[in-house]
Each structure stands twice: as C-alpha cells, then as structure tokens.
Image (cartoon, rainbow, N blue to C red; front, side, top):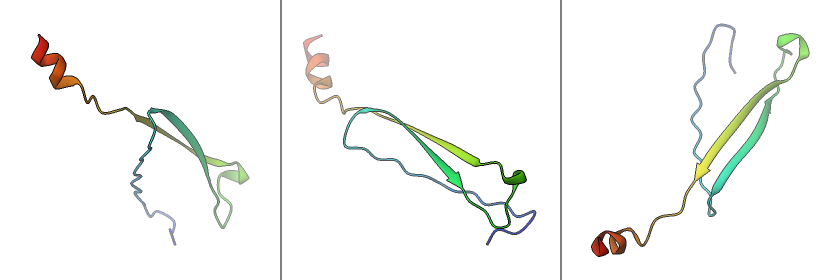
Length: 62
C-alpha cells in the first residue's frame, strides 16, 4: 500500500536481444481513484545497441 504523503521509488531494468529504440506505456490503476479518474500514464523508453565486435580490428588498422 502507498498511503497519502508516501513516496515510492521504482527502478526499471530494460534488456532486449535486438538493437533498437523501444517505447512502452503503462497505466497506474489506484484505489481510491486519483486525479479525478484521469489516467495516470508512465511512458518508458529504452535504447539498445549492438556490441562493436570489430572495434579492436579497426583500431589495429589505423
């Protein structure tokens, strides 16, 4: 339970097997209803890249 005047910090971990830019929206449902019933939406964004497996080879050429 989160009571009035309480704070809650959440940490998110993101992992993907593919490179890309990802966005996901989550809606927080509360009891009692907050914000006059308007949706409470969190937009989560994540970016993944591939490991540069040829970096050292390029550096060696230079």
